[in-house]
Image (cartoon, rainbow, N blue to C red; front, top):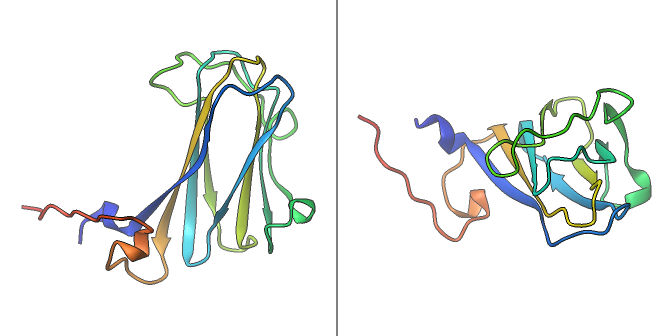
Length: 145
């Protein structure tokens, strides 16, 4: 089995320039997966003014609660070293024991910041057998040697 075939990628944020103090949020459904890696890239090296991951049983914005992944409280939000290759933040989360949905919240420090965030769901409870399992239009596998 190809190791990466047990992962599912989900685009969380693909935002145009956001206003300073305008928070972008996105949810990912972790049902059926035991781990989730969330990576965030932004177009500026300034540290975001807010960055956190929360969890909830529903997608209702008022139902999300902390999982001890709040910038400024649980970790220091550092400035990025590069705007093109290095992510601003990476969250590695074991989803066992957490609620079904994870929510990323991001507030840029400058009004010109664009952001992209991707969630990689891993360790599925059942195997991935089709493009449908990946929520993809196409699934291409290259045989291993």
